[in-house]
Image (cartoon, rainbow, N blue to C red; front, side):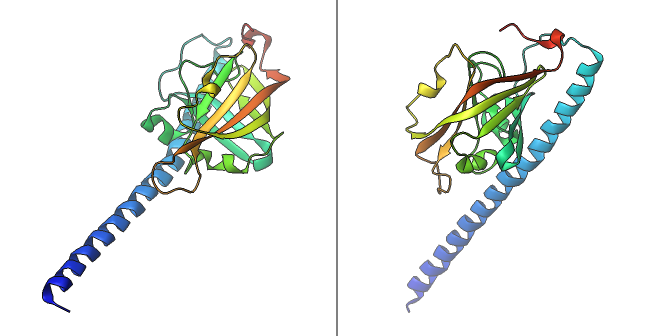
Amino acid sequence: MRTREKKFLNILSIFLLAGGLYFIISGAREYFGSKFGQKAIEDQWEQTEKQREKTLPPVEEPPELGDAVAKLMIPRLDTQLYVVEGTTHSDLREGPGHMQGTAMPGAPGNCVIAGHRDTHFRVLKDLKMGDQIVLQTRYGKFYYRVTQLSVVSPGNISSLRPSTTRELHLITCYPFYYLGPAPKRFVVKAEETGEMEYRTKAERPNS
């Protein structure tokens, strides 16, 4: 083998190793970042809950970006995730994000929550029709039932449309196991079951 070919192969090997190392570090950063982010949001949630117990009824204050706004539970999959306000990259690293401009978790209307397919919302691949989803907010618990699972193009925004009833849409990228930016979106639609557990009458929101 000529010297020039050897040199080219050596350089190519270095680039391939560097590229592989980059993807490993990037993946590890996202994975551990999502774990630590959820722990930080959980701590914030618990501290806020303790404070609310001392100051009932709660003061109506709009959440700031990154604030914990709900606890999302999928009983069949033994899943519990803390939802933050906002859907920026930094927000979604902490946990699934409530899309601003849509109904707040538990409130009347269409509540939209987005998350990363390779961290917090990987669990959505195991959802089935009829599965129960529970949203816990400062007012209490709200129960939903999965009524539709669909794969759509990024330009399909039907899941963002306002609703007069309590609806929940969970959105993530698709396919779940895809190298690079995923070309489609996986959408879960859930509708309220009529079950609600308010913490106190004083905390019952206008609906």
